[in-house]
Amino acid sequence: MAEQVIINEVGPRDGLQNQAKILSVAERLELIAALQKAQLEHIELGAFVSPKAVPAMANSDEIVRALAAGQKKYSVLIPNRKGYDLAVEAGAESLAMVAYASEGMAQKNVRMSREQANEATIDIANQAKADNKNIIATIAVAFQCPFDGPSDPSIVAETTQRFLDAGVNLVVIADTIGAADPAQVKTVMQHLVNDNDAAHLACHFHDTRALGVANVFAALEAGVRRFDASIAGLGGCPFAPGATGNVATEDVVMMLEQMGFDTGVDLDALMLASDLAETLTGSAPGGRSKAWLKPYLQKQASVA
Amino acid sequence: MAEQVIINEVGPRDGLQNQAKILSVAERLELIAALQKAQLEHIELGAFVSPKAVPAMANSDEIVRALAAGQKKYSVLIPNRKGYDLAVEAGAESLAMVAYASEGMAQKNVRMSREQANEATIDIANQAKADNKNIIATIAVAFQCPFDGPSDPSIVAETTQRFLDAGVNLVVIADTIGAADPAQVKTVMQHLVNDNDAAHLACHFHDTRALGVANVFAALEAGVRRFDASIAGLGGCPFAPGATGNVATEDVVMMLEQMGFDTGVDLDALMLASDLAETLTGSAPGGRSKAWLKPYLQKQASVA
Image 1: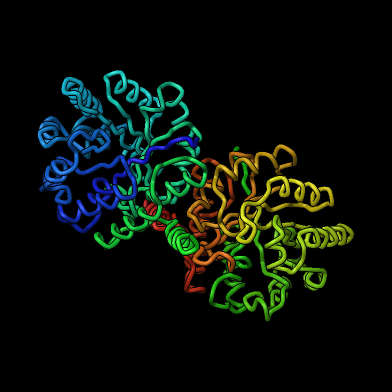
Image 2: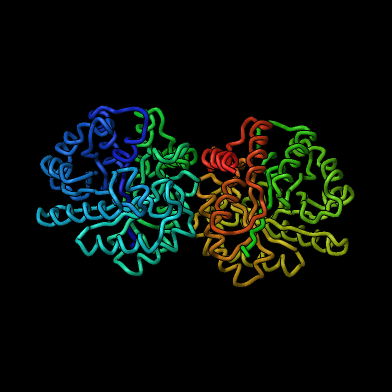
């Protein structure tokens, strides 16, 4: 049996949040339905953040009410306790908090110290345990920070340990600005996989320097078996001008399937979801493998 | 001291040969001059093939006469003994022959059996030894063939061994159609590096499935320290419709330098060469890292 790798589709949240065009709730639901059709089981549905600050995520509660009941595989981003309460009230079962590997990014993004942000995550984790909810903690700028430079791997390791000890279900090691290289990824992730159960670890890469897929491979080599990815490469980072988006779901899935891993994803339906993401946003970079993959799949279908 | 990795720039031959627009000799010399300015020491200058069949490589002798004297780091592609004689007469010091890991590609490309193509390479290698010239042998479709499917790693290993025993200076393991994945690359190349001196091995990747850079990393992990790459991702493959080009020099160099390897390449001058390749051909895909790398270098220059 092929070894499984979990793809957590972040297009509807991390992706859309960083595209110029604001989609309606109906369009966001249409995109999520296409992702579901592609058999993507883990999806980040939306965010409970200020609609003034992040208009693309306004009315995420409607999406959560429609889809999240009883679904621990569907997550939503929350910034704080208020977000937690709103998300849980709407029916969310998995809540994602963001922590930071650098002081600079913690200050810029949430005007907290790194330690304050860690404590906020642990407070939420405690509440979630009491409520029988899942908590995902993303460690942002885990490899490099645009303000503080290269991140300290020992801070990433300590923070990961602390979150897992506090009952966080999953720690996502995130290259928020797409600055990591595969050698660095392999070193950092090998260390984390040695010290922790890989089932509680994931990686999140951006394709800014065209290294997103290589970084996924490096993390796989280190034993990571869960990855964030974004349909059609939707996304970006407000702190990395000129940055392209998240590593594209289609690129990651294609590589994994070709290497013999089982992602459970239906590639034909994934192409449709990718096309839809491009159509709806008008600005998705599109998966880099798509120019090859789409005609290949069409040819296979016509032969079969 | 940083460990060295050799980049062999194949844009002026493998790249231009697969672009729609035919450049003049003056334009080709201009591109090569820009590559030299970027401190790329190893360059594939042109090909001594039929100008009817491959008009983009017509008059390669003029380029060789201008640049190749005494330069073993500059190579030219030759298909046979006639090409060898013409290239040597023009002053070429390094001659590159193509062999095949599959019967299907040997037949389609040169109407020979795989064995006949191997023998032709060994005949040329013997002559080259007598003439004190370098011989490079590329093993095409070393990972997958569009006609015969996945290539047999033991054929690649045997052919490599045979060429090195015959005095071939360098064997290039080529993913001609951009179908390899990094797990396969690591397995195949680890085997070859174990059995042979890595100094006599190189890899050649295409970015068709967006895996070019990941494949470079996988080969590096296996111990390979020499790579073909093409400025601005120039190139393609007539047998892989929709295929994007060779892995881009700027993407490979950026990753290597970031990981602490020494390529000797000047990144600022490399951006100029990449821009020139795009301008001259009108159709170069451009390095995938360039959207980030170019503004980054410009910002660094303005700070300095």
